Amino acid sequence: MSAARRAAALVAAGYVAMGCATDPPLDVAPSVDLTRFQGAWYEIAKLPRPTQADCFGTVAYYSLTASDALHFVNECHVGALTGPLRTVNMDAKVGNPSVPAKLSLDVGGFYGDYWILDVGRAYEYAVVGHPSRSYLWILSRTPSLDDATLQGVLGRAGAAGFDTSKLEFTVHDGAVAPAAPQGGVAPPKGYGCAGGGTRAGDGPAWMGLALAAAVIATRRARTGCGSGRG
Image (tube, rainbow, N blue to C red; front, top):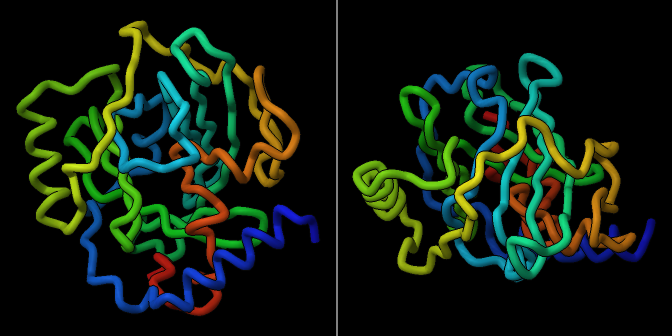
């Protein structure tokens, strides 16, 4: 096992030991259609993560690989909107077909909850989070959300226990995102990144919208502790 994977495993074990069973219940969006979830999403806001501190213009691209599985590519520019591009590829799978909003993120054999908490009727916006309330992303099909929609999203997230006062809003240049990832689609289960400005081994250090592997990736799917598989 590589040093990066050992580090991820140790922190993941610590996360479980700190009491994942104490996470209060968290409602997810009902009747999520993963087919409609496909395509490009702009990151509007997120709870701060050190792994995303230098990211600008973050965009995620989702595509179905099976009726119950998504592959997604997360891209951001490092340091500025004109900075080098970083790309991360991840896979997620539905554990319980009756609850398609509860996805489990596969990080090299470890699993982390990646839940769709809120989605617009036209799939014009979405909110993704983690039952620990430590992770939250607000996504939109456009580089900005109208104020009424945003305030509604913030109100519901706050009522669900997320500290929305800590949200960081992502800077975009207003341009329409390309229809496909610029950095290419690399094999999804590796730990490296594809695209400009990326060093080998950067994968665990920057997970974009896909959850920081060394912090929340756990074997919870194997233990049944808040795994999102039911």
